[in-house]
Image (cartoon, rainbow, N blue to C red):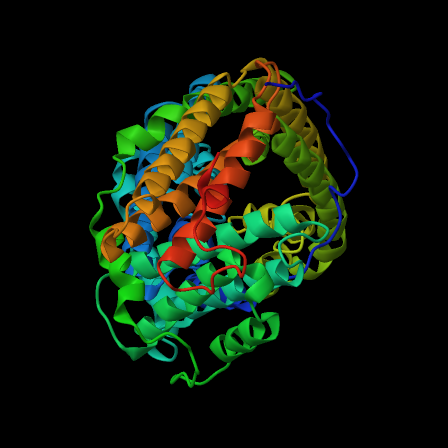
Length: 554
């Protein structure tokens, strides 16, 4: 049975402030450490006009703070190379033509490529927005072909410095990201255990717990195959979280939270009393680590509608800004690029947040401009402070971070020379409104019919994973490794199903979604998952039954 969900664009809660990220200070301090030294060196040399190119590399320090350090090293290399490639493309284009229409078109295409690659690789925040901001601004920087290598070299050099800044915390806390991910999984599972699997909000809490556990496993797997006592303890804690997810009524939320608190503590060596020493609990870890990841092409295919939205929306926003005679059409282009999320509803939310944050940010710029114009040192220090503020606040709500990002972007344009604040503020307001309006219209016009197809595929995958697990449970003596394999496969399929269903429900102009089938698949999948955990002996069996047909039936 399928049911159509009415398409709405709500305002309630869009601007509500959330709790700050547990590690809000890490990207905030990293960007200060990455941005300040190059800018101060340029200031001492009297070449602040080159700051845009050093900022390109410095802002790479914003990425990958949730990744284990082995994975972070790889991700940051690709982020730096992607940033440098975008800057190089933009500077070569700017050196070959000054036609604003061509520049906007190239900027829109770059934005679409950056958006698609960031989504496909799940690079994480700030995703494509910073890359697009830098490459779009570079398109409108006066340039000769002979200057390009030097400017690209500055971006590459500061990108290398950002890599060092991003990796430095690993010297003091080598397992920090994995410990945080595991702690989040334990706390989410404790919240589900509080409901005993039947209380108010249990379905939402169960989905959140499953997603957190899956994310923690992915964090551990991305760190590589190296084993040590801390890594082994984290894996066993995640097994305990999986047990609590399968049998919430038998779980001890206080104990789960105590383990999470220990992981968040400052001690390098963990002192944990973890039941279940059987190495068989982790039979599936090595198997899952060895499984090949989907190819990049496979991950890019479903993102074609998002890429089209980005290219069309950014191009039209830039053209509209040019038609109105605004001096910096790349601001409208970047505004449009920043809107596009997983579906139209989330894009609407981001649009409202972007407009509100930018308008308040323009007022902040009007207040800061007299201070920043005192001298070049004041300008640099204001930009550094705003970098810190943006990263410290953006985790609470995107609009709050934009209040700092907007004046920072305006002040960066003054590194070459001071400009009239009123003109800058006016241009930014106009471009923000143009970019948000045109960008959102493009999101509505370019429909994502593939969202329904992806949901069907996710449903089929979840049902097939449940059937495989049920078939194995029906055997009299299933192999422990096989049980672990189907358990992890089913858990991953259920997480993907929930994420895909949430994304599809926010789209419009598509066929009715099979919502009832999704609910039934989730319920049956989690029953089978619980039965698998009990069959492995990791959780206590129900008093009235062990593994029964009730546990595994659809």
